[in-house]
Length: 629
Image (tube, rainbow, N blue to C red; front, side, top):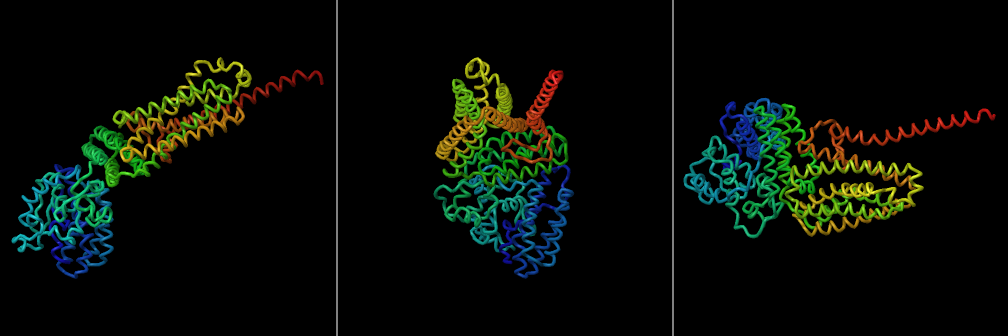
């Protein structure tokens, strides 16, 4: 291996003294050791194959010393890293013999990803680096060896082995990323003139690490594509060129995106880290509060864009937050494991943040959201309209129309003015409460329809006494049913479309128009088909639709209240179908089950009563006719 490549900032060995972290160091000491272990393995992943190829005994000896330090660092972490020791020792056996460079590199890469997860490590800055500050720090702390332009050509450099890095060399920079530079700046490199800079703040070290990558780049011209800090910190220059083109490389690490989404996710990450610290200190109540703050103030404000881009990831995040909160409530030692999984998921979300969808993507997402959110509401409205038409109660149709249009108006106002009012806990609370009110009204509607479907005398008099049969109370009920059935979906749709409108307002507009057309066609279809059905069949089908929707909304409403800690959580092994309001939690599933079984029990009881009445009637008729035989 060329010794100029074993340079201080490219060599990733994090050189903290190998002493056991004291109790005073606590979590911070552990985190440094995790980073150190990751850095060693990253170095081996990149340089071990070159050392084997060089057949240089000195280079191979260097690699053996690195893996020995990795084993010692894993021992230093104690039980937390015990599960990784066999894998690290297996790598050590290969390195000691100088065998299998490809296998060692692959194993080190896999270990790095698993260690980052286990340690809950952050591999990027918490805010955009200050390159002016980085330039100042470079001139003060680095230029004496690396030169004012970072070429490593100072006279003193000739006396060093290895020589200081030349940050203008393409081969050198191809194997470097800001996260690796950050670790080396933090801890230095043993056996070289490269010292660590522990007195610099984390922000200063990130600013310096990012500045190094601008030294060889030409002036930035134009506006680069939006890329998350998480990706910029963990990608090499060749990675970024492959993803965004050579022309954008000069600007990507100079002009950082004004990414509200990533900042919000970093807020969530900070609260989760604080929750883990409080959990370690035994403050489980404080840990629970921090986790709730992380979700409401970090994830909820950007959930719309996250869900539009990666709904599966959002589902995992919500489930992980609930599991971590439950661990805190129970004082479980698994809080650390759950918290580290949360940190990994948040970083995964950050890697995809900052990207904007094009107009067509937003259009299709808007259409799908409207169909998904509006399907339940339109079915309910259509069923009510068909039932009223069948009953020849057309004067009450406008009451239903007034109900659902009023809900749409409220949703439109929410879209225009409610971005902040409907964020975080406010939105979840509103969705939960509205959902439960809608459940009550849907059950009322189902009972109302069911009662009329089983009152033949009512059916006979309906055409003559429509107004009296429905009454003013039923008129208000019809309005409330239509209003609440649409209100929750209207609110939720408004919040989703707000997020998408940030990417493409025109996409939201055209997608909304397309969605409205499809939903109106659905209403007309159900209304026409329903009118042609027999009265009893129509009312029975409508009752089933209303009750099924009530069961779905009950699950969604309870889940929303659980997310803001207004209701407790009780996870159980079960499927998760968010679209149907089914969540693996007893607090929501049990009421849903009872509500779903209620109509079945009612029908069974009615049939038993009818059978008994029929039997009693038959016996009475038989007794009266006996003497005539």
